[in-house]
Image (cartoon, rainbow, N blue to C red; front, side, top):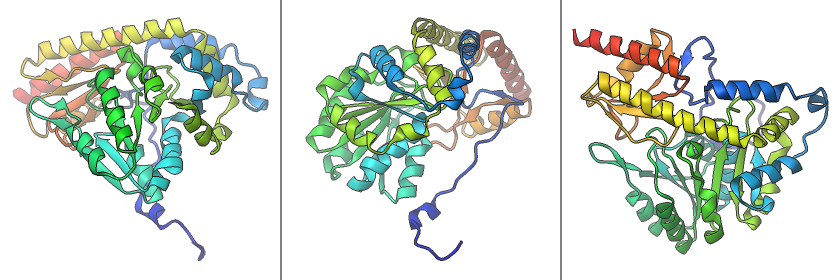
Length: 363
């Protein structure tokens, strides 16, 4: 490129375009594939008009609706173009000036990507321990006690485990963070499927920021919307970075219509959890030596007890046009594999294929 001043840290990260997986059964991306969601979206899309394309987006109505759904004042909420944009916003506006990001692992890759892009040092804290594996916050708490004022980020429910940290424990973590001058960011991308939100902790924790994607729980992965909840002063500061400028009117209108159907969405979330439990029981019945990690998300992770088995089964299922995630490359999850969920009939078919693959391997 022509000689010109650039951000050198940007050259240390690798941009990988998102792949097109429309031709396979995609049980890796955790998109909400549910017949009720498809019917609801079909109805909502039928309400859109040409004006939803040629007009600029107006966020007032959607902001008030989302605030009501999550029981927060409207001035404690920002809408962003997906959780990746929300994470980038937090890194730009807060982590870069602080000069530090304390990150509980495993975590969403966007945290490491945007920190690397901006040259923000990352303190990575192991969040898994034991056999069978369980979540731990010990390393995170220790890092908070010794790090300078930082952005501290965690995910609840966890990904790729699905494990749920009780709100009371998150409240304790937030208060430890406050004592040491940190802001705690909780990514609750999957919390709808567990029936809770960390927004309930905002009144007692002015240092808490909650990120909630609409990609999974509102079946809007293609529309790219997320929410940032925080104290009014934090929201006012983050809003000065104009995250609303990259939102589209069709996305805003779809979310506005879905907010009016929140009762149907909650029914779908409960059914997704039931499908998860049914699929888990079937797979464990077929594989009695496996264990399932307790999940509060729209996916389930199985521990096979065999090192390398996660990636092997990922390849075997990929050969049958089923896309899942083997987790052997994640610290503490060697031999594990994760399935996100679809409708009941499809998950039964996937369980049949999985049983065939594993029985063939034993022969």
